Structure formats: C-alpha cells, structure tokens
Image 1 (spheres, rainbow, N blue to C red):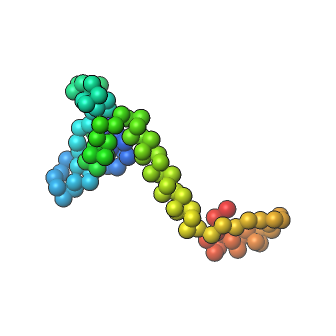
Image 2 (cartoon, rainbow, N blue to C red):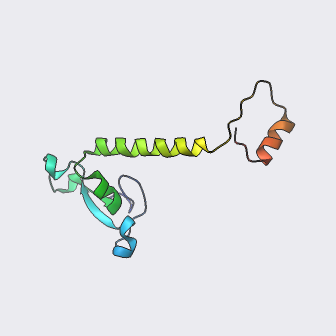
Image 3 (cartoon, one colour):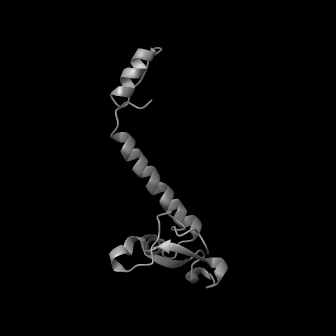
Length: 107
C-alpha cells in the first residue's frame, strides 16, 4: 500500500487536501476491483490520484496500464508530429552537427 506519496498509476505527487487539489487528492484504489472479486485488504489497496481512480473504474491493473500506455504513445506521436524531420543522405561534419544543435534540431 505504501508508494511514497505518489499515485500508483501515473506517479503524480499526492496530497491529502480537498477539492482545490482534486486532481492529486489521495484516494484508495483496489488493484483488483471489488466488482471483480477484489478484497478490501492491505495487499489489494494502493494510493491513487482521484483522476486515475475514476478513470480506472472496474478495469484491472493490467487493463488500466494498457490504457495509460496507449495514451502516452499517442501523446508522444503527437509531439513528434510537430517536430521537423531531418533525413541525412551523407556523413555529417562536426560543423553541420554544431549548427543543427544550435538551431534546436535533435538528432
């Protein structure tokens, strides 16, 4: 149950404060949902942010982590889509690399 005051799923820091901090407010989540036979004991409870707890609903841990993984992949793809793509067809000189670095092109 102890997970260093971060959400078990998204690892956002948790607080114990009320509605003003609702996205990071500590809640208890059943790893195996009660709806799927999970017990309300120490080995099946984790601290989770309110957002993850609500989104997880009756999903199992594996099902919810798959949802989070797909969301992260989509965000990463959207971020990459907004970055310029550079294709190199020859060796690059150190001078060219330095220029690319200075103008913010990551290689």
